[in-house]
Amino acid sequence: MSDLAIDNLRVGREGRIVLDVPSLSMRGGRTTAVLGPNGSGKTTLLRVIAGLEASHAGTVRVGGSRSSQSRELAYVFQEDVFLRHSVRYNLELGLRLRRIDETQMRHRIDQAVDLLGIGHLLDRRADRLSGGEGRRVSLARALCLRAPLVLLDEPLAGLDERAYTQLVDELPSILAAFSATTVFVTHRREEALRLADDLIVLIGGRVHAAGDRKAVAADPRTAEVARVLGFAVLGAAGRKVAVRPDALKLGSGPLQFFMTVDGILDVVGPPDVMGRVGDTRVRVPLGVDAVPPLMGARVVVSTDQFVEVE
Amino acid sequence: MLEVLGGSSTLAIVVRTLVVSGTATMLATLVGVPVGYAIARATFRGRTTLLGAVNTGMGMPPVVVGVIVWVLLVRSGPFGDLGLIYTQTAMMLAQFLIATPIVVGVTAASIQALPPRLPDLLAVLGAGGPRTLWLLAREAKLGVLAAIMAAFGAIASEVGASMIVGGNLERSTRVLTTAIVTETSRGEIERALALGLVLLVLSFAVNLTLTAVQQRGSR
Image 1 (cartoon, rainbow over the protein chains, first blue to last red):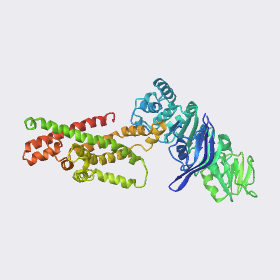
Image 2: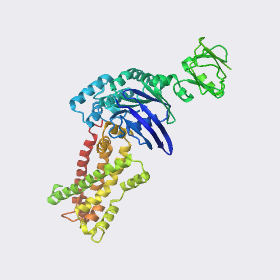
Image 3: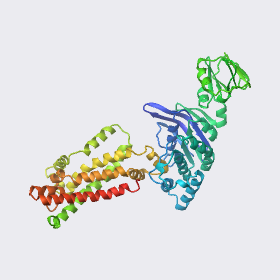
Image 4: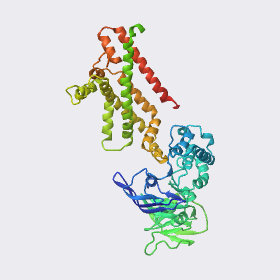
């Protein structure tokens, strides 16, 4: 399986740096999610890896090779892109361009079609499919290529709820079928946490966290990463506390909140946040910017644990 | 009408028209489609100005092109030694210059109308440069064939450039449009009208063929 290594990568656009990655590696054979808010450089990173966009500086090595020309990869774009032909033609095109023989081509297409459940679409015009059908055909086209490197750009974006729910359930088995080094970008943390082995948090074109998914998700080191991972971040006189939204609970009384504290961030000097991770009773002097995340969080009445908020 | 058109000279004029305008259209397609593609895809300083110039060229009066080519090819001109003035080659050159901006402009617009990620898709699927160009031209075939039809229509019906650089020589450079002018000036209105009808039928036949290709599989 091809490891992927990025060194000193810088990409600029209209005079500003949109991607600045001093060093990043992705392990071969694993699924790595690149998670970040819109405009954080996720798609640019994927395009540079694919050789579709040039970098100002730095290198991308796939399996030790720097050449993007010889990079054998499959790419699923954020929006469905098809030639104005049948689904079958679109599935065959990449295989014909790669000079795969007819028997092997049939075999691969049959397998991908079965896995994605698109047999009934083969003779339909690919550019006239619905969103969910288009996504399936895009994934099948990528799957047919059997590339060692698979890049997925928001593979579930733009789907209605029903199509999303169906496909997100099937994606783990689809990704397993790729049997490749897979990188997918998403701005939805639940997708990243559900589908990936490893997680990269990209914010403002910079990598803020990278590593094993569970480790990154359990221990956000900065408030920015905590926010991307879905933590409510409470400001407290210059200190911040990260709280999982589903652990944030409202007790009786206007100023009393109950919560489990998952991480205490940016605490320097004598802490205003009185308590440690795992404590059941934590006292948080509430800062002004604490109000929006509290107000937006899911509110559940509970008596498990609590925090007194001043 | 057959009596009016009778004789081998009419057939020769029809064949000559097809050869001159057909060759010029083919050359304009070979040059214009890749150039139109390049302008549509590339980003460089002055691209908008270049597209503006191409679009201006689409409306270039044939008579102006004729005069320019005449100045270049006339015996005393910079390329006079080539001996091309008053030949079919000179007519093809003039018609090529009229047709190319049309092919470039319409092709560029058609390629720009394609899904923006299509070239990226073809690149990651493994298509090289020429193959990408071919596949994109096929995707944009409605526009590209419209460009070819517009180009052929423009040069098969033009008279100014052909008259100036071809000289309307009866046995070598007379084409349908210049023949119509000649017959009209001679007062042979019936024959002029008949030749006009032949030109229309010829144009219709060529455009019908291209339209059939254009519309195949587009519904």
